[in-house]
Length: 75
Image 1 (tube, rainbow, N blue to C red):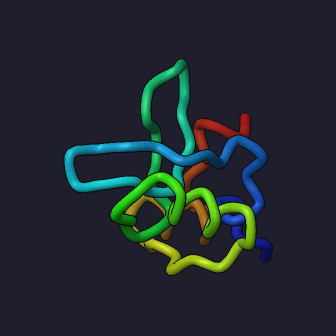
Image 2: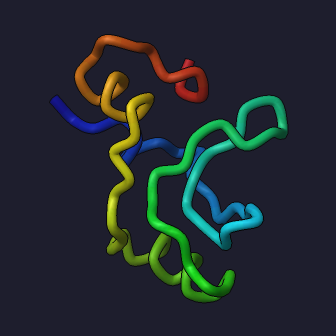
């Protein structure tokens, strides 16, 4: 099964208090984080473009990956 988090067409660089990360938004609000944090936007954007980043398999992402939960972004 393909990991929908890694193929999501809505992935983008987002920012939180902890730093920049690759994630997706839903209704213009952060929905999920699929990468570790980066110090600056440029590093995160480069990781997104290359596809080379450490995948964050949090509980929500794990459930989507296993097909137990539907991704709210890829409806």
